[in-house]
Length: 307
Image 1 (cartoon, helix red, strand yellow):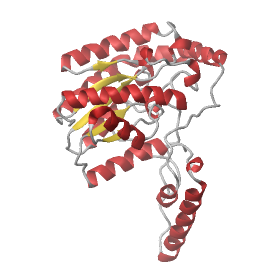
Image 2 (cartoon, rainbow, N blue to C red):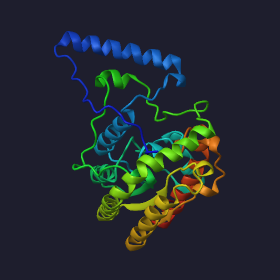
Image 3 (tube, one colour):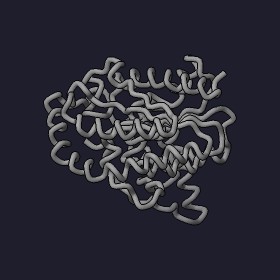
Image 4 (tube, rainbow, N blue to C red):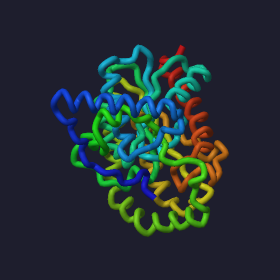
């Protein structure tokens, strides 16, 4: 199964011109925002393109006002997007574990290729930064895009989107597939995706090495991190692909003198923590984030970025 679902790539429509439509749009946006505020957290709904829009808006905001504390980025596809509870909760947990004040951002987004991650790193502000580069089989099945430009988020107008509550989570408790359906996804991946993995592995592995180099050229600290996998269902079925990319990633990490971290098999994950094979529901997010926060604190201290 790929790390991410297909999202529409249509560009956002411009707002209608003229003072009257603009005023009307502002009133509509304000009313929508008020309604969502009254509705509370339940009003937050993931919409296709929201994750890429979050990447875009985050980069705009932190370049406009660069943080005065260390920054932590998590990069990867939709599996990465689903493995953090919320950014504020993640930051608070890092501080509670001894990492001090940081600005931690989950920039995981649907079908994010290593080349897209490279663009994010190059667009980030010049501040002390830890970059968590998420790895899984899905990051090696995509065709490396010719351009590193980020995909244009789909959806409606900027005003309408500004009124919506952003929710990075597309998947929730109660949506889990049965274990039988999950096992069928394992077999389907072997039939459909494994041939693509073999064909595209070398190209993606080369871009990963460029991504690591770009981080270090900026003075950032990259860390390779294994993203979630439903090992209880996949078991040894994907060993060929997993061993190959992990062997290459370890070699790249050793050559660059950076950490490669894999704790997925040591945090008590169950099949019920996943909606499928790689995307968490709430219980999985809590387990993964807790260990990831400890990894972040360890590296912040190692690189002199923590109190």
